[in-house]
Image 1 (cartoon, rainbow, N blue to C red):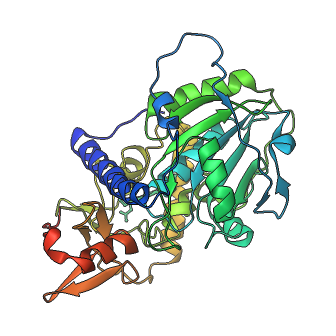
Image 2 (cartoon, helix red, strand yellow; image 1 turned 120 degrees about the vertical axis):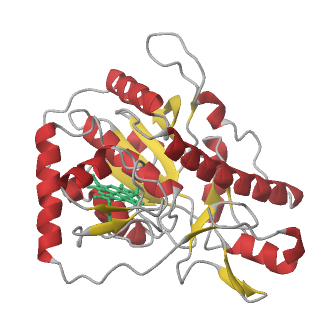
Length: 378
Ligand code: HEC
């Protein structure tokens, strides 16, 4: 996997992530004031740490838990013991950082499909993410992956587990909209010990994660299941593109596309290839540059097959309605980029519709609008 983002697009991405972290930092301060702050949430510190060659060192042991997964099975550290696993923290209603992480999760699952490495996603949204909601999420991303468990937890369990993994998952004022600012992957060995922490947005660290996981794993002899629904489903494209809030629907991938830089481009095969290999080079208007590059994750034959598959989808549904005009604006409280979806938190202020990343930012603005001058759209 190699990053192919242009410097400009990288800057936007960094801006979005910094904005996200900034927003969480604000919340963090707020929670600390309320006494809700987690001690020792320092896992990210290990993500960029230099280390010697050889097997990754033992960092700490995972906390104890007994959680229900999306197949309604109880998952404990004991049940996971015996094979290494890769873990992350997500929530299903998140439309920016988590889809990026889940896309990477699916790429890791493919890269390690000949091994016994398992995959665990802890949901940090107790109010919304039930096992049934997580089952639907798993189906959208990689329904045929039997080694992946998505775990639901209560608010009480979340407190202990995020503390044990040394991450922060800070609830906002809106209980349905928790925010997390740790976008790392953990590598846990067969004995339940954390062996590495890796940034999910760093290609080099993801490559080390694959190598380290391979080093701790055994190869599995059973052939990986072949998913129905083609590469679009197998690669997790559906995880983002089946939700118009996150990514443009691909059923009408024909004709001219309006790009964020106000130019227009014809959606021919060359454009579709570029969109898959260098997604941040031409960004579709109204969307955030969150699609990862699939360069290195696909063989040439797979890329050809995928482009042909998208063409068939488009040809099947030429009458699909044009996507509704949604623009990207700046949340005046946390300065994160947000989309003007009808169901995004927003309010009318002096005749202008103002959009926010979460209810917490909207409430802060409502309380004291003078503190947060409106920012012109990017
Ligand atoms: C993490 C979410 C995410 C995943 C996973 C993802 N995409 Fe995207 N994709 C986006 C977003 C957001 C856009 C619009 C912004 C842009 O152009 O970068 C986009 C744009 C596109 C476009 C251009 C669409 C248009 O209307 O012109 C194509 C084609 C595309 N993606 C194909 C794919 C394919 C094929 C896969 C799977 C291999 C995939 N995407 C996986 C988020 C994603």
